[in-house]
Image (cartoon, rainbow over all chains, first blue to last red; front, side, top):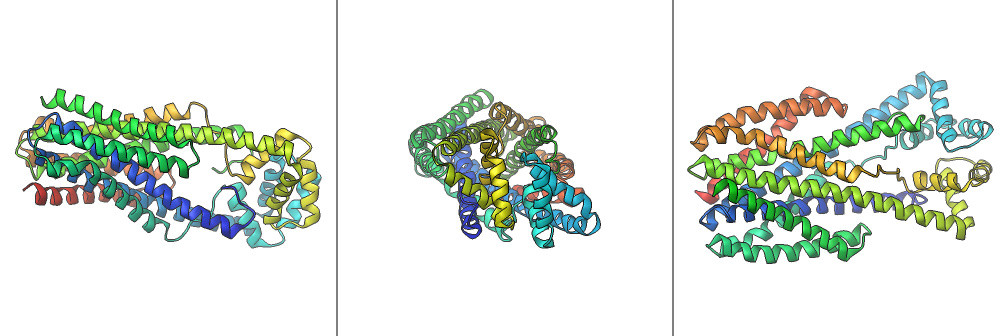
Length: 235
Length: 235
C-alpha cells in the first residue's frame, strides 16, 4: 500500500495481498465456525459420527457459500469498474466542461489555488485516456481489478475454508465419545488459531502475539457459546 | 462513491453504505450456511430436533465468529489509520524533502509536467495538516474511519446472521420429519434468498433480477452439495 510511485510493483503487491486476504477470510471462518459447531454438538449428542456428519455438511456449505460469495464479489467489482469506466469515457466526450470541473474539484479539495487548479486541469485533459484514468482513480476511487480475480478468489477462499474446517473435526474421526473428542479438538484448534492469528497479524502489520490471542479468543468464545446454547436446546 | 466534492456528504454516504454492506455480509452467510447445514443433516438424521440443535449451534457459532471478526476488522482499520497518520506526521517533520518528493510523485503519476508538479507541491506543503491529509488520502489511499465502526459493524453483522439463519430453521421447529421440513425450508429460504438478492443488487447497483437469481443459486448449490455429501458420510 506504500508504493504508488512504481505502478507495476504496486499492482503485484496488491495482487499477492489479495490472495493472502482471501486465505485469511476463508481460514479464519473455517477454523472457527466448524470448530464451534462441533463443540456445540458435542454437548448435545451421544456419538462423534453425528458431529462428523454435521461438521462435514457445514464445511461443504460454508466453503461453497463463501467461495461463490467471493466469486460474485470479484465479478461485481470487475463489472462495476467496467461500467463506471464506460460512463466516464462517454461523459468526457459528451459533457467535457462538467468533467473538467470535476477534475478541478479534486484539486480544489486538496486545497490548491484556483490558478493551479486550472493549470493542472488544462494539462491533464489533453490526453483523453489519461483523463479517464484520472477520473477513475481520483474522482471515483476505483482501481482496475485483476480479470481473474473472481475465480482465484473463489478457489482460495473455498479451499482455505475446507483446510481450516477439517482441523477441528479430525479428533471426532478418531475418538467416538464426543466430549472426549471435543477436548482434543479444543487443544488442536486453539493451537492452530494461535498460529494462524500470529501469521495473520504479521501479514497485516499488527502486533502478532496480541493478534494471535484475539483470534484464539474469538474461536474459544464462539465454541463456548455454541456448546452452552446447544446443550440448552438439545438437552 | 460519486460525490467527492462535498466531503461531509460523502462521509455520510459511506457510513450508511458500510452498514448496508455489514447487513449484506451477515445476512448472505446467515441465510445460506445454516440453510445448507440443515439441508445436509436432513438427509442423514432421523429427527428434526437434531437439525434444530445443530442449526442453532451453527447460528451461535457463525454470528459470534462473523460479528467478532467484523469488530476486529474495524479496530484493525482504525489502528492502521492512526499508526500510518502518526508516521506521516513524523516524516513530514523529519524528512520533509523526501515527503515533498512523494507529493510530486503522485502528480507525476497523473501525467503532469515537472513544472506543475513543483508548483502544486510548493502550495500544498504550506499547511502541514493539509499536507498530511494529502499523504493519507492520495499516497496511502486511506480514508479516516468512523471511530464507532468496529462495534456497530460487529452488532450489525452478528444480528443479520442470526435473523438470516433463523429463516431456514423455522420449518424444523414445526415439522418433526426432517425431509418434510427440508421441503418447506427450501421454499421459504429460496424465496428469502431471492428477495434478499434483489435488494442487495439494487443497493449495489447491479441488475436486480439476475443478482437475485445468483444469490438463490448459491444457496441452492450449497444446500444440494451439503445434502449429498452428508448423506454419503452419514448414511
